Image 1: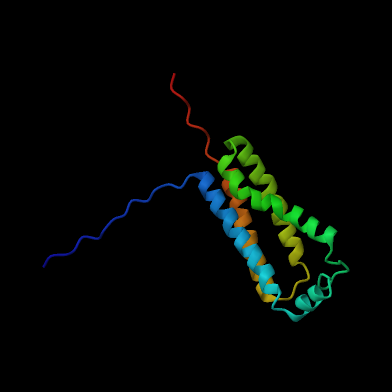
Image 2: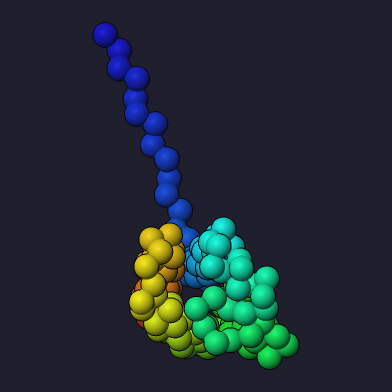
Length: 146
């Protein structure tokens, strides 16, 4: 009786820049969808229709929307920066920006009771820890031959 050989596939290493880029894209998708799903909540939707941010004293105005964009821009820009920056700067920026967002994601979950939000925040936090770890463990350059 002949056995069919098991087909083997070659695993190719993923460049650290591509891995970081993919991690930032994934984190942004989770980040965005958690916020989008929030608009299915009556308290969030009603507050937004009244020009307010639910369960806060904040008004949705020019200042709030500009501040929100300023908060989001670093994570959005990380998608392209991870591909374009030189390794030394890339590592530093990923460590700094990743740590900043990790702190804000954890802080925003404090006192939250909605499971979808907590689950999304947990996934965001895990992705950010992987970003930080990937940047921290950035491979050293291969020494050049004399």
